[in-house]
Image 1 (cartoon, protein in one colour):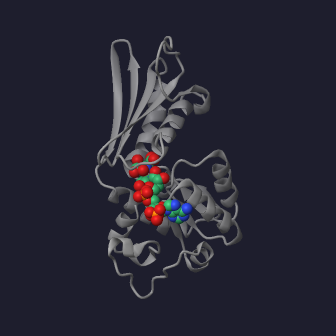
Image 2 (cartoon, rainbow, N blue to C red):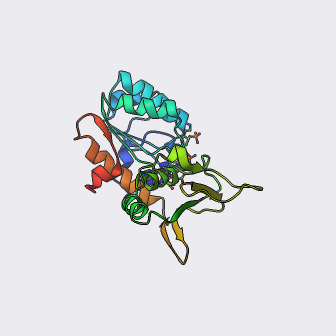
Image 3 (cartoon, rainbow, N blue to C red):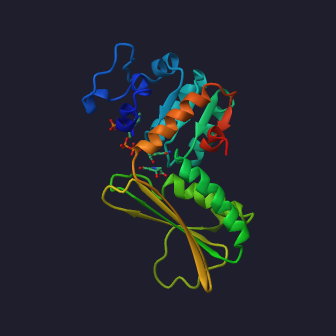
Length: 239
Ligand SMILES: NC(=O)C1=CN([C@@H]2O[C@H](COP(=O)(O)OP(=O)(O)OC[C@H]3O[C@@H](n4cnc5c(N)ncnc54)[C@H](OP(=O)(O)O)[C@@H]3O)[C@@H](O)[C@H]2O)C=CC1
Ligand SMILES: O=C(O)C1=N[C@H](C(=O)O)C[C@H](O)C1
């Protein structure tokens, strides 16, 4: 995501990491550092698209040096999710597994469809590029949470991660989340609602990673004016 953020003129002066990797000369006012404390102390807001461990380091240090944060990193474990909640008591944090407007709206639609189509079986498929490290995608899990919430269920209680062998019939409440990987697919999520005689499939396809960068920059401008707390991109978009 760093190359997509650098492409955006407004974000460019604030991008601090690995600039030379992308053959880009930072402007004089940019701070280039690999010291997370210096980064926190000198930044008005930080955008994090790294890996779960990188996000954990940022949050741990942010607890001592509160700074508004926009976090898009996925694959956070339970400890890291708790750290996110704890840190949000001391600073405004916007966390979203997907920074696009389309997915923010899709989350709403899925919750509504799940509630209205209570007899339909729900299945989620996500597709991403071959370089993606975590599975299933954070977006697919968030969509699954909305689908479960629409029926008053907890995703952890009903989630299926794979099917293989003589597994028996599908149970009514289960929600499978399956991941495909290949090529340069930016991000494609399909939530299907299946019943006897009809089905609906809701699909969102990101065709450029700039979509996520633009959402994150909008979020960064918004989060600096918010009181401490944990927000999502839906809050920023007024959804
Ligand atoms: N919420 C959203 O809308 C989106 C979320 N994402 C998520 O963002 C994350 C990054 O994705 P992507 O950009 O494709 O991944 P990449 O692997 O392309 O980039 C990850 C970057 O993080 C750096 N990094 C790795 N470890 C650390 C660390 N411990 N501390 C600081 N930086 C570190 C890497 O540096 P180096 O190369 O030197 O290791 C690299 O520059 C993933 O979790 C992905 O799911 C991605 C797109 C959209
Ligand atoms: O790794 C990616 O590329 C993406 N990750 C996010 C996720 O895990 O949901 C968002 C987007 O789909 C791209």
